[in-house]
Length: 247
Image 1 (spheres, rainbow, N blue to C red):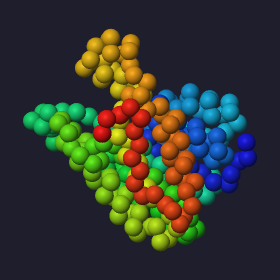
Image 2: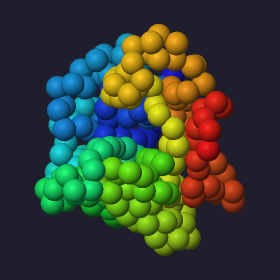
Image 3: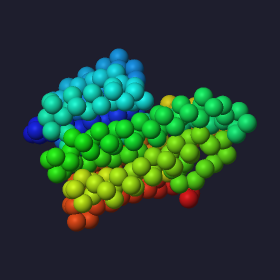
């Protein structure tokens, strides 16, 4: 592996999509700064990356705290120039409208929208002086339409999409690629499998169609492809879904 003099910061480096993104960019030679609220859960990811010869710095990170998020990105930039910042916090919850409390609505907005704004702003502060970089945001079906029970989640994801779109228009001329990736399907995670089991029963899980869920590694590959785009053909928004998804 040829190591690059560059870092990739993954905010929301969970067990599935975030972890897969971290592994992909580490395998491509980046020093990866991986942040999640419970940093101790990053140990398996660190072991896998390092076993493959990659470099990774695990951090406990509550992205809702501006000072913590800013320090996380500055630390990454001091290790090596911050080349890529990927915001991957989900905050997917489902509550009927009348059961959506003020606390739930605010917390989801803080996690999935406000912290994305701070991440994009602080990454841009570090990238603008060098005149290069990439800032990518993970979106969802809820970024484009609000479904039953998703008032809080859709509001946050709509807002994150607006932040990303505004940032892309402002930062593109400064040679900073901002993109918003809409994941328009279930990703193969334990949480998604549990929801399928709850709705459809154990038999549905035994006969789960391979075309129904996306692999986290496939999502990570989409981010890598975005990063590789030439600057005269940048994508702002990309929708991805498995080949069997109805839409």
